[in-house]
Length: 395
Image 1 (cartoon, rainbow, N blue to C red):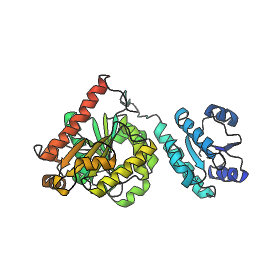
Image 2 (tube, helix red, strand yellow):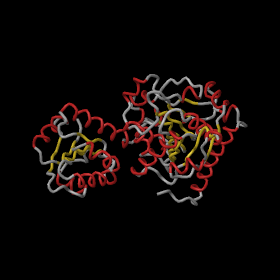
Image 3 (tube, rainbow, N blue to C red):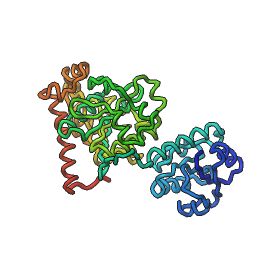
Image 4 (cartoon, one colour):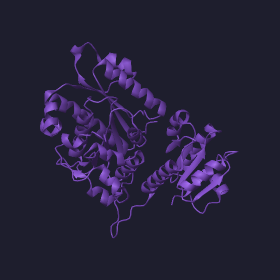
């Protein structure tokens, strides 16, 4: 049973949401649309805060988006679903923290699926972890979430993320977790030479995210002191992992590890956008060619429009080769941003991937390893500045 509050003047929509929620739906009028979440709850006279708020945005879309944004901040235990035109609302809805946008014609079965999914994600995210006889250890300040992003495959994203995570773990064992969010075709396990017993789909099925001890027992340990949450063993395993569940996993891990490194899938799918919602430090990766630079320019423009491109970002140019007709300045002009680090092409890096040994651990003197070491040093220096209070959070 899902506690649902509906804001709508449509009796027909009320009937469908009522059936989809198992009879637990409370409805309040949408005209005029309440602007204050507390006023909305008072109108509903509900015995408790709803798990899901469904807002009919077919008439007052701007007001609905504004209300959703306030709900996301003031009532974080309530997930918002909008009813309206997804093509018109989706971008603004994503910015406001809305969980889903449904067409007005959505049937009862589809409504029920969405309501249950959103309610489950709220329960997982905000349920207090309880372990019999054990007090869960959490960080006073959530750890930093570093997402490695690239608009296209083949940019060396997994090489960067695995070596960055290993480098941070070697400096501070036990404080770093790497999550493979390329859910269908992730190869973090291969790059690290791991044979994981559990993967992220196992965590989701067991609802282990609610229990920090159970979550940690499902992480695979690497010899560097790094913990790893691998991608599903088969592409079919990705089907059981939703963006909301990914967000819950990231939130839970950031309470236990100083660094959460995310190896994302190419492009900006729903899972990557959910991860970016919780990212403190985006690392944007491109290759030293025109298609790579143009792809990154489009990705950065999208992230900027979504408000996800923070000043804490790092831009990395991989497979740098001055002899291919391009310069770093050409790439910077295309993407409209400074390149923070260039990494040369190296046969040793490819061999390291094939052997399952990160190049920073196997060949630390290689040119690629040395450049990656500067990236690790950058993040460690930022950590020191933040811990000493000399770093101001990026806007």
